[in-house]
Image (cartoon, rainbow, N blue to C red; front, side):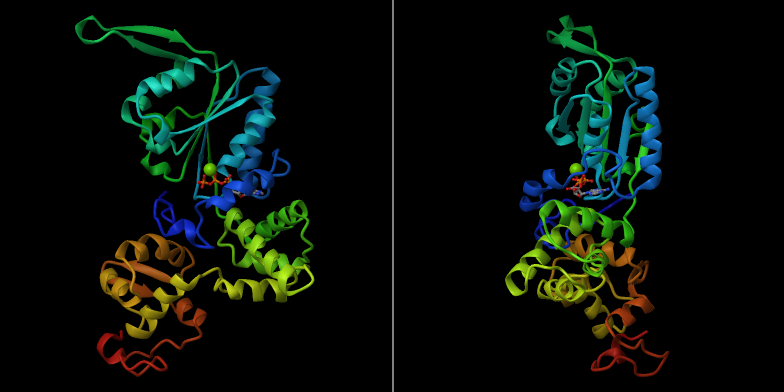
Length: 360
Ligand SMILES: Nc1ncnc2c1ncn2[C@@H]1O[C@H](COP(=O)(O)OP(=O)(O)OP(=O)(O)O)[C@@H](O)[C@H]1O
Ligand SMILES: [Mg+2]
């Protein structure tokens, strides 16, 4: 699956509701990470399955099978990798696909692993081809061929590796070559969290950050967190600031709503850009269909920004559809912005004189 939401785009990280980690997230996330499976909120199926895999390996006194974690940014892949190490009582080595450009880089890491060590390979879909091929053999046979010398005299010296567990993480499982995907004994697909689960994440984080919050305050933040614990934690921090400066520090529904109103994150988690796209689509183009380029000009953004930053969440929320004829708003989009969809043939949208030109 392709989780384009905010990844690899410059604009993504600066948004309060962007799913990619920003500098502040990186600084505080370590403190908020659940340390073992029982603390890890939600993802029931993944937790159950992983618990079995790890428990069985522990009972056998063996190294756990290789694990692939796939899912959108901020759903807990890095967190789970650390939990796997903790549950296996094993050290963890952390690296990433982009950091491994040459097969030699990977050989150096693999050959220095201890028995039972967890190798966390983040963004595994961004590894170079030769490194990938070396990884196949390492995963399957715990062996790598180290090439010594150059040209016709070069020889491959096989090097035995201690058994280790590879934990790969990717936001784009679809980009993994099948031979690589097949070498993982267990694949965990992380789903977006439902509001109840996010509420638990928020309560847990509030406890760690020493923030007083009631059930309704947590629910208010959860509803705006786009199914993503990282965003929930970030919104909680902004709400905490507001509660501290403008009130007595306690987070209630009113305080949370007012705080996130200041940051223009609406009740459903849409921010200014998301709403600008929807508003243009509804008010200027009668709900579409309209081409992406035209829509982008109308909101004064780059095509890519609209397509990669705003649209994925709007599509996921069922507010916007991408059709062969262009972008189309769903009835839910009209409702969300408090507008009335145009009747077939009749005048529709309040305050817009343009539906004659563009209306459906
Ligand atoms: N199930 C969970 N329970 C509680 N907190 C969670 C959970 N999942 C994620 N978090 C919190 O969300 C933050 C982001 O999680 P994490 O860094 O693991 O995401 P990720 O999937 O690795 O994201 P990326 O794709 O950007 O690397 C962490 O600080 C963690 O505290
Ligand atoms: Mg991560």
